[in-house]
Amino acid sequence: MGSKKKITVAVTGLNAVDSPGPGVAVARGVRELEGYDVRIIGLSYEALEPGIYMEGIADKTYQIPYPSAGSESLMMRLEYINEQEKIDVLIPNFDAELYNFIKLSPKLKEMGINTYMPTTEQFEARDKVNLYAFCQKHGFYVPRDKTIYNVSELPAVAAHFNYPMVVKGKYYEAVVCQTLDQAQKAFHKLEAKWGLPIIVQEYISGTEINVAALGDGHGETVSAVPMRKLFITDKGKAWAGVTLEDSRLVKLAKDFIKATNWRGGFELELMVTTDGRPYFMEINPRFPAWIYLTVGAGQNQPAALVKLAMGEKVKPYETYEVGKTFIRYSWDMIIDIEQFQHFSAFGEN
Image (cartoon, rainbow, N blue to C red):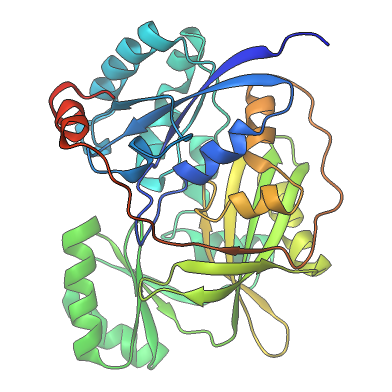
């Protein structure tokens, strides 16, 4: 048997908290990349992200500047990290950081760092602000919505949509509101956290289904796995979920990929009404936090993305296991305060 090829993969999003980032799950999937000896580099924003300290997740972690610091300071930091680590593939896992990474991808390529992300056009087309127009154009079901910049616009929107209605943050979080008072509170809370604009959406009743998928950038689907949430936290995050047999949902992901030539991983958040109509609630432009379920179901999307980023041909997956279930849990990790202090002081661990 030949020796395994060495590969170094950097991942962001190590905050395995009650509203987890996808990084830990992505790292676990990449670890199972067949034929490779994988080294994982964690890229973290805060010193208390659990993925920094978890056994078997990152071999080494570096702190990186917040997206708000801009692409130049991120580039400087990545140049330093790459000098130490010689990164082969980088996988960003947060919506808010993607713009900077997409912008930097040609420079990263020059440094030998491969990425597999959507283009700026793809990224912006599925943005919450543009979602309604995008779905109308391509014939997908979508709730009506209104983008607003001032809390004073809420009464007019409410009169148009009626209650309940959904108030959404620019990047994350959505609040179902039954009254104007609740909508105003949600507006202020989400504005303070994520900035403007705020999106107000018509409420659609039904079963929430999510599809994790991977597009090859040329309109072909490498993988698509639908999941129904079994347990939802108060932040609306799936704490348990099960893979579903539903060819319509897989076809929906394929139709989206064909319509956009999507490059990389994404998640469709759908609301399926009692009469079977799948409404697009959100299109997240990266892997979801539950992405390890795709590995368990036989379609290792993070590993496939790494291969695509390295220029390898990847055969599309044709089957996955139905009824595979994930259950997330909390676990008290014990570390020495010195580890935390070291990371806080030096920005690496």
